[in-house]
Image (cartoon, helix red, strand yellow):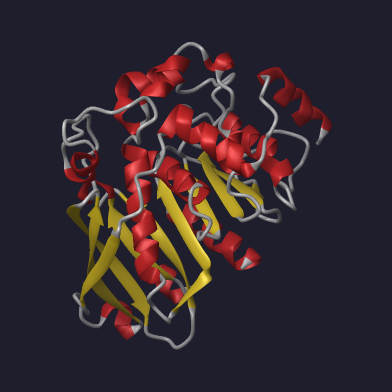
Length: 344
């Protein structure tokens, strides 16, 4: 490890990396909860070409509904599937999105199609609402009385479970390249994308944009959002056990580099923004550096904290930092496309 970065990481006092299985178990038990059980049955219905001549005929948009049987009860949610009309097998994004709209201003669908990608997009609130109600949607199927155990899944684990069902659908389509399945998300849904890939090795790439605390940023020594901040505002994203670490990060038997390292030896990329102080770009970058030993090719970077417009895409773990605030930009998507094309 580089000398200056090694010093910065030593100051954080991070636990050493463990096996993937051990790290995933710790993350599920102590932070996100264990993912919901696999459905005993899952089927799909498809409404085809809901937007005629999309992207000048370069793609079709289908509206799909996943029908799942879980805990003996029926649960369904919709998602969109944008498929290029060009022959061949296409890499594809499973985008965990804030909105159900396709096209969407934060998801440049036509540009993604022009770059050869398919896009499967689900709206997180169609799975279970982003609130403390554990009787809503999938949460209500899992917890009929609204009560959870100490390491029962939080909302992040439920949204990730739904993205994994979208991947089930992708596996039924001959036009998609399953060796280039990418799960991605922004902010809380960036946390979800990382957890999704950590717990499902079918995803070959994961991208987290500005997910920060409890996502891609180290908790120890952060100058941004803390465990106390996020648990106070959003306790329902996590399992009940996570509350133990409020003002007690040093007692955590892990830190967020475990989440990134759990995706190895597959590929993961982190996007940060220079003015997103709440996410703390330095802590995001140092999490990537700390996770690097898990990858056959670690983060290829200089021995210093990154500056604006630094892009590191050569290793199995990548990072980029752009100017600006907390949003999902065209530049973020372009950096992700570059990373996938380089390693596909």
